[in-house]
Length: 357
Ligand code: NAD
Image 1: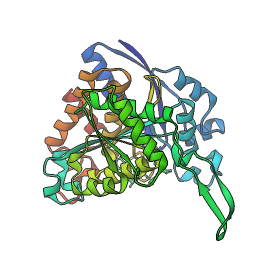
Image 2 (image 1 turned 180 degrees about the horizontal axis):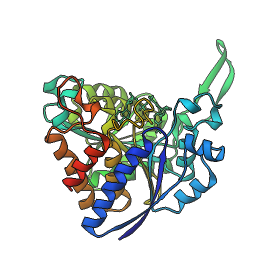
Image 3 (image 1 turned 45 degrees about the vertical axis):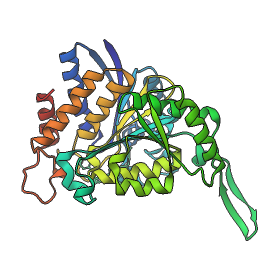
Image 4 (image 1 turned 90 degrees about the vertical axis):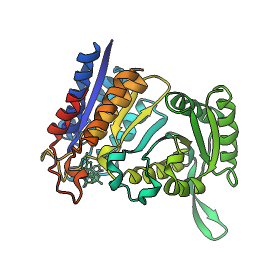
């Protein structure tokens, strides 16, 4: 098969880690008989330098004409003093909006080989864990009505949490579809004991789930979910939740894996086209040193194969190769910790993964 992939390398370590993922995808293409056509577009600080804008029109059009998009990271000290609308990070919101991406898939996986990096007690994470947080991305309190008004105690500010049936239905469908590709178990996280919008959320999630007889859906209050994540993370598989709860819980879950350089993400909309990127930033402190861990971006490419192109065996092959390098004790500098293991460079780690595909 043939796929057009837009590449948004961005700034800092962005180009290095995206190049690693491209090499991995080319290996997959050769082995499984696919053609990936890569077209780079400017985004973030490098786009400001070249065009004066963090998100040039050509980038938006190029992404909309691609089958899917792989992003490195944007930003850096050089552009930190620019005003709000001109900042590199503004381009991220812009491209997500232009591609109409309403779902954020954030896996948090603790590899047994990296158990030592998890801040939880070892007996709590004996078997590792593999959580997929499905976060609603374009609704809820971050986008609801807001403002200032005169209240009981004088001037006050307010923000509104609001969800429509349509918004809940579509995110619930993504959660159930995702569960069908995993262990067919969904936990829906809300605050239905207090919030009206959560009561609607709960009702609609169960109505959608009825269309998926193989998927088991249970509910959990968000305060309990925050607690359960550190008490027994292994109980979660797919967790679906609103924009704000997802924002908070996905950061909590990512910290449990102990290493920011390992975590991929996907943002999806109503079509198969998605935006795939590592959760970390542009790491300007290590850019150009060969110290960047490419695994989060390589796993983002694997997610692209799985969720945008339905290439399950190919995605499995990349994830298995990553498992194997970690099991073999190979580490980039961020994963070495206090041990005396000699760290691999970005390119060496990429070569080791490619060797195992
Ligand atoms: P960061 O994620 O870039 O870095 C935090 C720390 O983690 C640094 O010490 C860095 O060296 C390390 N790190 C990050 N990714 C790594 C990797 N793949 N391998 C090894 N080590 C890695 O966060 P920050 O320092 O707060 O932000 C730096 C810049 O990135 C800022 O301009 C920020 O706005 C931007 N940023 C961009 C995105 C994005 O593009 N999605 C996300 C977050 C931050």
